[in-house]
Each structure stands twice: as C-alpha cells, then as structure tokens.
Length: 97
Image (cartoon, rainbow, N blue to C red; front, side):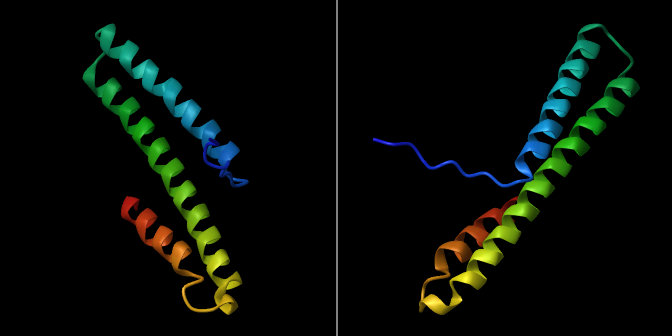
C-alpha cells in the first residue's frame, strides 16, 4: 500500500528554513529558562518565535490558497462538481487563518 503523494509548493523550502530557525530560537528560549535568565528577555525571545511561526503559517496558507484558486479556475469547464474538492480544501484551510 502506497503512502500519500508528495505535496510541495515552491515556497516550502523557504518556509522550512523559517521554521527550522524558529525551532532553534525556541530551543534557546528553553535554555534561557533553564539558566534563570530574566523573564523580560525570555518573553522577548518567545515573541520572536511566535512571530516567526505565525509568518510561516501565513506564507503556507496564502500559497496554498493561491494554488486552490488556480486549480478551481482550471477545472471550471469540466462540469458541475469539478471544483468541489478544491473548494472544500479552501474552506478547511481558512480555519487556520
């Protein structure tokens, strides 16, 4: 039995890079807490991690929405219901905005 097909967009490498960087910053935040660093410094770093993750999510969703819309336009002439899978996916991913 085969697994799901690879699903990649050209923005994924940049998003992966951003998330890896955020992961490194998050590890630093944990170290800061373990070392008893001032809460203000920890909070500032957590804010930076949160912003990086939010930006990565935003880029992923915007890219995916663009692909869904493009697909819906491509299949509009294929008859009733041809756009439905893309429309359903469009609705599902907007829950994460």
